[in-house]
Structure formats: C-alpha cells, structure tokens
Amino acid sequence: MCACCSHGFLTFFFFNDTATTEIYTLSLHDALPISRPQTEIYCVEPAGFDDTARSLIAGTRLSIEPGQRSVCDALLGPMPGILTFPINHRLLTGGLTVTDEQALAAMAYAFTTLRLVVEPGGAVTLAAALNRCFDCAGKTVAVILTGGNVEPSLLCATLMNKATP
Image 1 (spheres, rainbow, N blue to C red):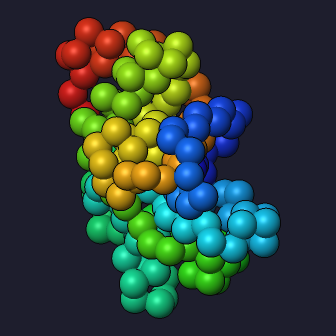
Image 2 (tube, rainbow, N blue to C red):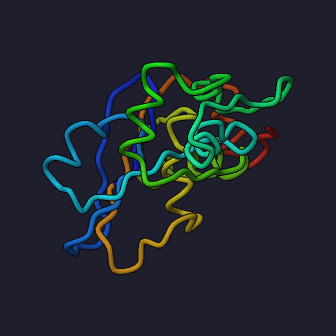
C-alpha cells in the first residue's frame, strides 16, 4: 500500500494479490505493524525534501537545504517532527523520493484514469508506484491518495502537459 501524509481524504487502490503487502506512508503506521507484522512501511517525499529518508539512515533528525522549491507544497516540512520521528524511526522500513515531474504525471494519471483530483503532494505515492521506485512485482500494493487542494491553473496545465515545476 502507498500512503502519504497530507491532510485530506483517503482513497485505496489495490494492485495484484499476494501475501506480502508494502505500505508507503507517514500515517497509518501505528496500526498496520500490529495487524500485519510482515508489512513494510516506507515514506515517499519530493526530491530535495527527503529529510525523513535521510534522517532514518542517520538515526537522527536532519533538515533540508533551505531555499529549495517543489510543487508538493503539502510535504515541505523543514525537518521530521520531534514527536513523529521516533515513531517513524521505529516503524518505517525506509524512504523513497519522486521528482516534481513524476508527481505531476501521477496527478494527471489520477485525474484521467482514476477520475480523482489529487494535489501534487498527495500523488507522490502513486508516482512512486507508477515509476517503479520500489519492487512491487508479485506483491499486493495499495496506494492512498490524499488532498484535492490543487490550483485549478496547475491542474489544467498538468492535464495539458504544460505544467512546469
């Protein structure tokens, strides 16, 4: 399953059907290891804003480089949270990153194929699945898409393939 930590509704899409499930999330990770201990949980972040992924490797909270920009504005915290990092460090398997272009393409895919309006930050997990940022072969993968807070002009430009991050 893929899930991002945006503020919004959750929509589940399941692919394949096997005994192994992977979850890409910064939310939902409290209940899943209890109910499915074999579940792998990953965070997905915009490229350049992989503070959680880098912090997991380092074992301590690291910040992002100041002055960077991304269309995934819902996910641009400067550093993992004081309260959430110890939980993430204990429960997350690792972190993945996607580019703004991949997030926008996933946003367009969600609209044209799934008929859902999803903001760029809410599409990062779908982008990770569509771009094979993790091994999902032979596994059940569910993607949680969140948030519809996208500027109409960005959505239109993305659908017309004219969006630039």
